Length: 198
Image 1 (spheres, rainbow, N blue to C red):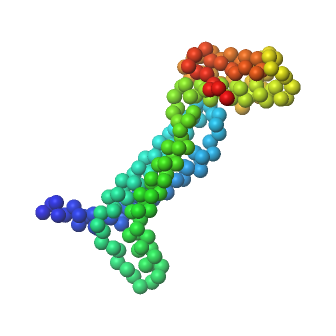
Image 2: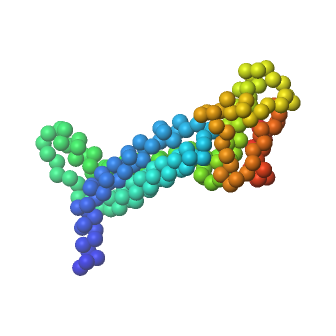
Image 3: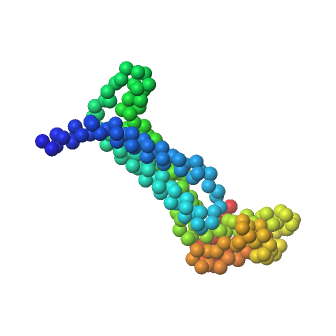
């Protein structure tokens, strides 16, 4: 008897679950423009924030797919009312399950693609590589500004003046940064923390 009640409950709750799933997918999509415009070089704290936002978006999209899948059980269509606006609203509610699934899957795919690479994890190694990129970019700006050539020595104070907030970032694992001359990549004392080849 109870087994027979499950499909009946799904018929009644299907449109509601689909609508909730679609709402969760739309909430997840609110984070997508922000994730898509994140700069390539970010301080460690911003990398962690991006990871948290991406995780929340993934949870929203997964919830949308799960609720949409449950709502896809055989359903009892919503009652049709004579007005055209009410008919359209009723159709949207009845079909919310597949909208929830498709928008949820599209969101999952986008977040996984956008959040791969150097920002794929908020671990200290990737944060350190981001820091080295910031320092390297500051050295390039300094070389252009002062017309410096490869091999020219630069000081930390000179590089600091070209960095955002005027602060040289620190390695999250305590490594020591070497600025190095123009034309050479900045390095960290931890061997695994190094810029990839261009």
